[in-house]
Length: 283
Image 1 (cartoon, rainbow, N blue to C red):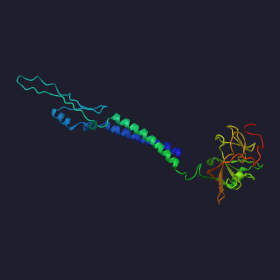
Image 2 (image 1 turned 120 degrees about the vertical axis):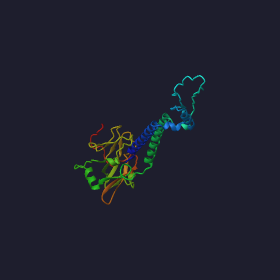
Image 3 (image 1 turned 90 degrees about the vertical axis):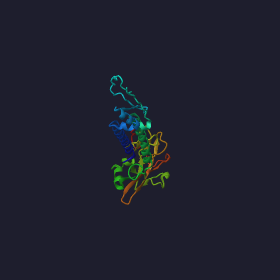
């Protein structure tokens, strides 16, 4: 699983687990007679001695009141009888005894969910940045195919070139020129008569398509042009198209090392003639 997919999946899992936990705890707190545990023992003993039921109501300020208002009205005492006075006792419950209210719990759970999601996202992004690419994908060594097959595909029967695009490497594979500029000597940018050019224009990063009629690369964004081996010809581009280091294995596989990009300045003398026909983006 790559980093782009791992981050949203991790955030979704954290959010779902937090929401389930909040709902479960809130539901359990809202059911049953758990409120009796939050009332002081002295209050319950006093209420039982009077024979009156008490309902505890916990407010946002976490204050509990024992309400005693269900006793029947006393009958008129007979002459000479002793009158018994009934009193109401109100006991304040401390926050420690009352516990956490549902609103307080939900607020804390919501805050914890957002905080956990944010920290989880940051952690996943940090790990994905540090996690090494084991194999495959841009930034690693990409097998473009057999060298002989690539050479056959990159050259038309009439001798014109037809680059082989390798999506995984974001590269065009073309025949190397017979004349190589000195700035490429010893840098490993050609192997088996093939080179690999980065598809990105060095001006502002647009993808540079191949123009079959002119036999070169022409950027549609700002008009930069390069010949068939990526050497600068015209436009605002500051240098040649970037090249990848390449190699051939013992089994004739053409390897593009997309983690090794070679940048070179504009060539004073071109290795390949350009253009060989009409341009695809104008004069």
